[in-house]
Length: 89
Image 1: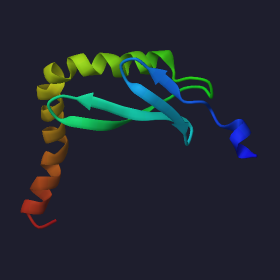
Image 2: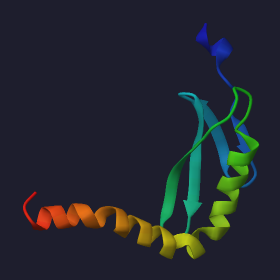
Image 3: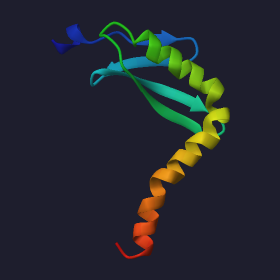
Image 4: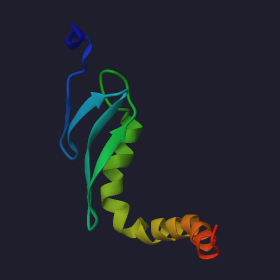
């Protein structure tokens, strides 16, 4: 009965198959040199949001260039936690 309300998978030439589950469109995204990551995109029952889909596709080409900025942001985020551990908090 609930199969009547299930969204059909969407096939994207670059990202592969995207399936709607839990309110979002799920798939996988290859980000060299780090590997494959789970992808979750917003969208309607019929298809992923066009802007979200475009940004996901753009990220594959820009990821290497963005890595230093991402690494710096992660380091900045985790540094206070490391300092807390170092002082016994």
